[in-house]
Image (cartoon, rainbow, N blue to C red; front, side, top):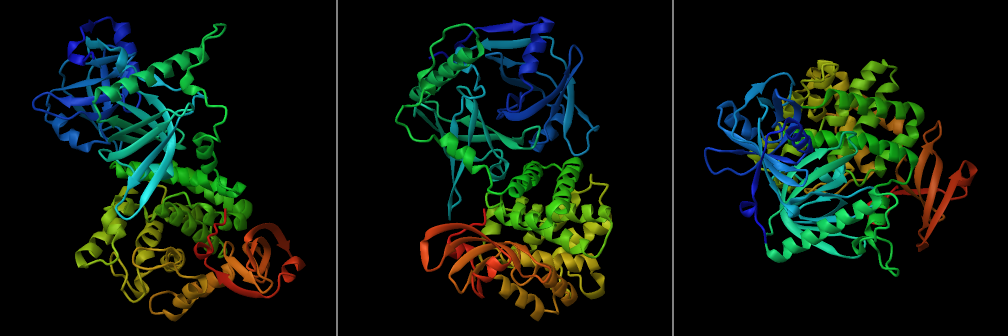
Amino acid sequence: METLSETPTQVVDHPREIADMLEGLTQPGDISLIFEDRASVPHSVLLVEYQEGEHLILDVTAVPEVASGLVAERPFRLSGQASGAMVSTHPMTASPMNVTPGRLRFWCPYPETLDVWHRRHAFRAELRSGMQVPVEITLDTGETTRTIRGELLNLSLGGCLLQLPLGAAVHLEQGQTLDQVVAIFPSGQRLEARGEVRHVTSDDRWQRALVGFAFDDTAPRFERLVWYLVKEIERESARDAVNGRNLAPSPLFQAPADKAASLAAQTATETRYATPMARRLAKVADLINAQVLELKQGQRVDSARLSKASDLLLSLLEQDREAVLFATGCLHREPVIVQHGITVAARLADLVASRQVPRELLKAVVATALVHDLGKALLPDALLAARQLDEAQYRQLTEHVETLRERLGECRWLAPDVIRSVVVEINERLDGSGYPRGLSGEALSTLGRAAAVVDVMDAMARRRPDRPARGIEAIYRHLLTHGEQFDSQWAQRYIRRFGLQPIGSLVAYTSGAVGWVHRLDEKGNPALVHVVRNRFTPDRRLDQWARGREIERLGRFEQLLDPEGEGLTPC
């Protein structure tokens, strides 16, 4: 098989050709930086701008370890794939730029020539619209196995670009080894690979994650399979792109007549939520998931993105607060820290809004609540999964608060007092037993006291490694009997605002009916219940809506149920 070293090198010096090659290197994952002065692994960087004949601008925020070498003017080459060829610059050096806060960017001279190796099997085959190839990634976390589903966007001999839901991509990071990535073509042909994550970014609209994946299998058999797939993808792309030519379809994209619903269809279904409000709320989740990806790459909280997410959630609350409160329980496909942030933001804003506060303050409350826990995404997985923490581990856990507070530096529209109240004081307790500063009593603000109540309500309702989830009644009892830790006035306000049978809870009636509470009346009693089961006939699924007197016919309220124990989800 032809290798790179065996392929003749062409020196390109025509300005137009150089510009075309550089344009091809501007896509995420298409360009690597390799230092010249010692054996060095390629680092995936971004070519964010080029001015013909003048300069290139590189972004190395995702690989901050490269910055020190560039500052020290260590010579390096840029290499990548463009126009079906391997492209490399001659050695160059770079100078730092300080024009973009939170980004590591460097200036380097525009190359006068490029070395080019034309390798047919180095082509990056792009999948056009309609050429859907689902992908499954299996992650073994030690205790559990997680399956992530996405789509293949392009394929080359060295790797591929994947598109994943943002909520799933937060479990991946640069340099992570993936033991099982499987692409399944419509014909049933499978490509099974092992390799390394090269980069994880969000798309321009913050709706999907783009993951660069490099293969580590160099066996001839594997390379032949990949080359076959590359050729067939190109063949199908040409057939779709050319009008008036009778090109035979690639068998790779022809599904057998007797094949069941494709995995692609399953993937598309899984990305949707059942209620319209849950689907709108998922857009807020996408914005926060994109933020998690960037935090893990060393970046700060994006001010504009957080403002957009906050405005969207606040406007949804203003449109239909009860639908939002129910939909917060539907986001079970999102990471827990994102679910928690959205739930706390919605409930805290709703609770504070009942006190007639300005909208500007409400937006700041929503924003800080959305991100208050995101610092935990930067902590080791083993720490978060620990069933018991020693003193050193507990101190490490508490660092997530200050880490997040520092990353909010670019969000100048957030009042420092609100950041302090929601991001810092949300984990404090009246008796000083909280963290990170051990604040107590009068040192805690009114908003901070309210935030602590809302936060613990949702946190205790979620299962953790060290304890099971608790029911609503048990959580209410905990708040009311621990007045030394939680502000009893805010606890009572919370209970009055959200009721003893809150929106989103699963209730059982004496008739055997089991249903989800969607709306409450002015007295805090269920006004709309979606009946999904009868306990006397548990195998029969129901889909009935009860309102007003119809709820009375369900019998007396009997108890609140644990949805997980019942095997039910609200959406």
